[in-house]
Length: 95
Picture 1: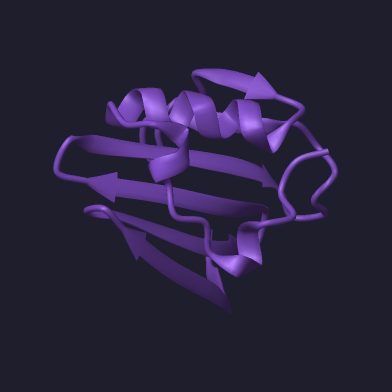
Picture 2: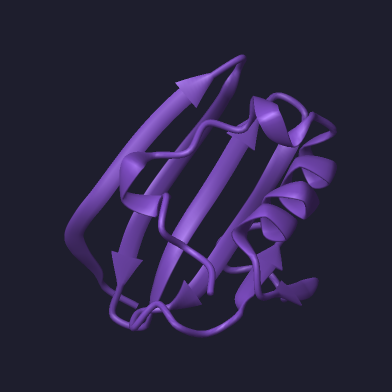
């Protein structure tokens, strides 16, 4: 996959979130001292969200809603979903 110019980043409470678009998907990754998590959606932005342990890791679960995907990502990091920073470019992910 090749990255395009679309990227954004946000940080809070020791967690860094990075949003980028590749040739095939929208990708939101989280990284902290406690772990990593990723949420992916097809580039058109209408498919279910896939939660992975890393950007290129195996899919763990799929969700229709962004809130549910964020809950799972937060669980992987061992934090509250409210602690996850969301870059503006990723705010519209989900169905």
